[in-house]
Length: 168
Image (tube, rainbow, N blue to C red; front, side, top):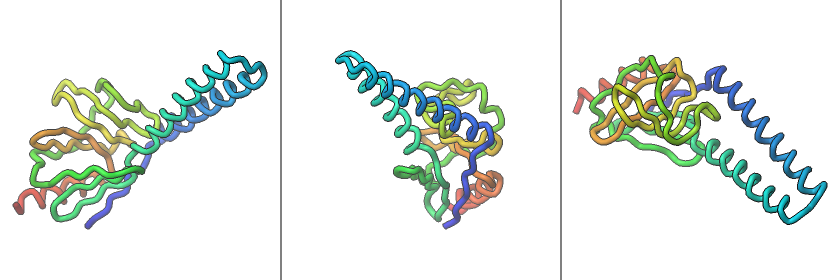
């Protein structure tokens, strides 16, 4: 099994820190506001807004990719919570990708803990993205699904997968 590191770009780091700071400040503001004049309305508002902020934060944190591994049969994307397994025998295409910025996000994070979620691209249509560095991205297209990932050594990763695809 070969493990590949997934690093964050400076842009993702800045976006994540900035958005996390804003979310925390909003949460602190709403809590202080609710406690300074505790009305039923302010407590309900705090509960709804606070819950939404916390759920958004948790959702983004647990879905971001931590590492990507290759064994003899699968690509394994490890996330903070869970993993995604893609059988190598189902891969039809794997290649570098260069124009990530023009895709349309349908659901997910557009930079907070990475570009993770469901996207649409004019060239290939709908796909699932797990990207924390837009400079090292690549496509993995299977018979049924399409993905975009990144790792610190994308060319080595792609070569290794192609060699395993050719041995089947």
